[in-house]
Image (cartoon, rainbow, N blue to C red; front, side, top):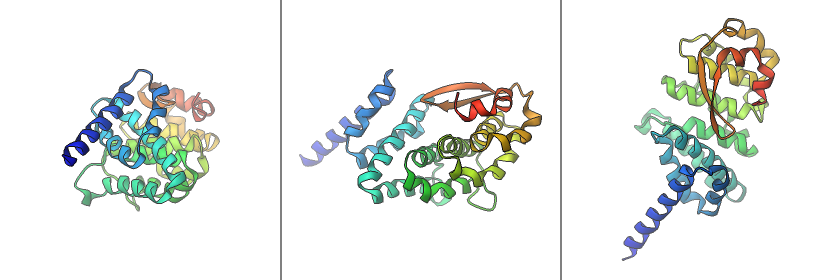
Length: 233
């Protein structure tokens, strides 16, 4: 009987989380996530990082940032366990791919000062070819988004990533080019501008999750408006 009750409670919690993530009023509903048991909620939120629905995946990223930063205020070690789990997901030995893990790391680092100071260099290392470089381009997009997300609030934590981002604005993948330009502009718009000469006429479109919404930018808009893009305007 006990196992049946536990299973029922798990299903109830899982359903509640999905309802919050898929709700049209997510901005208002997200506060309800913090009313749920943090360590249990994280497991279900991480599973939504693999969602085929793009907006659900991004909302899970946002919710993980909310939950883990709140958890860190009362139980820092439990929050570190979550960070280590996200890192493990990106490890070849995990046997998985780690979809969404870099984005979730970036969201947490952006939201919590202590965790940001502890894990900023690990996030950066994923685009450093002498570090923990990730070969998969989709994961690279996630890392660069995470860097840009952090840089929009705490650019000093991402300064070391600047030189690693430069090669991406020369690559063939338009998503990587656009995300790299966005992140570089957030880190240091003045320093970024001279690197953007060859993309100032780039008509490619990049989708970036900003302020809870998926927005489309033409790359040349980013390159020609570094100060506005840096401030997420």
